[in-house]
Amino acid sequence: MPKIVASDYQGLNDYSGDGNTREKGLFQSVFICGKPRQTQKPGFMYCTKPDKTIDTAKSAEDYLIYQQEKVYVILMFLRRVRAKYEKVPGRDYDQLTYFCWNPNNKDEVYPEGAKIEWIFAGALFDENKKPVMDVEDPTRIAFVYFRNKGVKCGNAFNYINLLEKKTEELEPLSDDPNFEKTVVTPRRFMTEVSVDTYQHAEYGGMYVFKYDLAVQLPDETCLDIIEKSKKWTDAFDNQFDVTQYASTSGRGGGSQVADSSQDTGNPKFDEQTDEQKVDTSVAEDFTLPGI
Image (tube, rainbow, N blue to C red):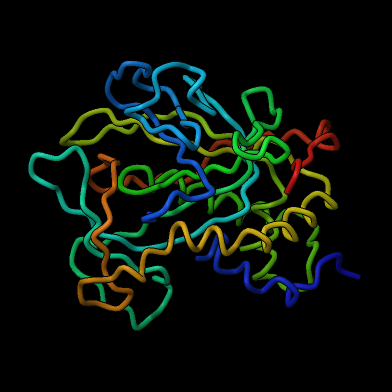
């Protein structure tokens, strides 16, 4: 008998491998420094604490992730959206001028230049695979997200493809093949996130996230993650679905929300060719504290 009845968790299909906020959200942004700042070096990952920003963080103590080349995350949400950004003269950020929360809609009408991006979000572990606890609620593991747009989108697609391949190899836990692929498999692993480079024809070398399978989790842990993901869907929606701020035409609407990322150009879509070595020997110790 399957361990998971897919119909009990159908809502999670919208936050899985098939598929900006005006208020401070629950999920903290992980970013790669592209140019030197007072407390940051290019080519390393950072994530500020909830009460700090990239401009107000003055020391290592102001960060959840500080100057790391590798971190780990248990993904709870994978969301595919479509967006368009435009340069703002004299500003350090791009303006989000179009946004569609459900680009799988076949009737979607979107403007030229609107591109797919992936939002990966979940529970944060440090370089030693130990939980990073939340600052505002020290009893709970910290939640973070990775926005994969522009040149970062290629590696995100590669990882989605890898997860689909793993679905074919693993014994299913649910009674629905599509649910298994889009919801179950991404939550059966701890994901390693590292810094990679992409050579852009116009802009030269650019830093991007690279995603790999790190640890296969016990089946019961996967079940627990699926169950707990339901609890935090409203928080995820409130932070990342900016459709309510639509002010331009087109299905899915538009939004005048600032975005600080400077990614440009078209992503490179490489096929996953390296054999993935997944650790299954130390998985039993992993928990998600406080959620």
